[in-house]
Image 1: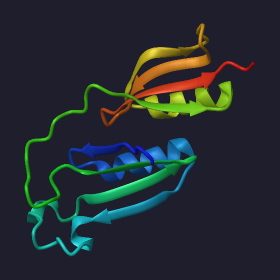
Image 2 (image 1 turned 90 degrees about the horizontal axis):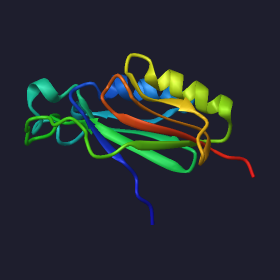
Image 3 (image 1 turned 120 degrees about the horizontal axis):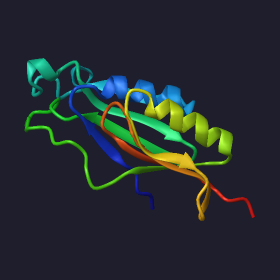
Length: 140
């Protein structure tokens, strides 16, 4: 059994997932527009070029997403809240690289630093409004 986060974006899923793939050094596994699916005629005309499904693999985990209003039942977009994606990395250098890359154009909510529970830990909100925690566990 797995739990995989599924994010929704306000029309900028393509840009977000291309950014995440670059920041995390992974490849996009899927990027499907509404126009590419059998539901193309049910999607509103303005939503047909939006992303119906995107996917990246980060280690053994899958992060998926789509644009909020690309389907047949558009509704107002709500900003994400009440969660953070937690990225656990293997070294302080990798933590620093990922933190700086993901924070570009966003906000650094808690500096990346050594804590009582981690070699490095920090929080940020990326330019797309997605909140993250970066964690590098203590060695030994």
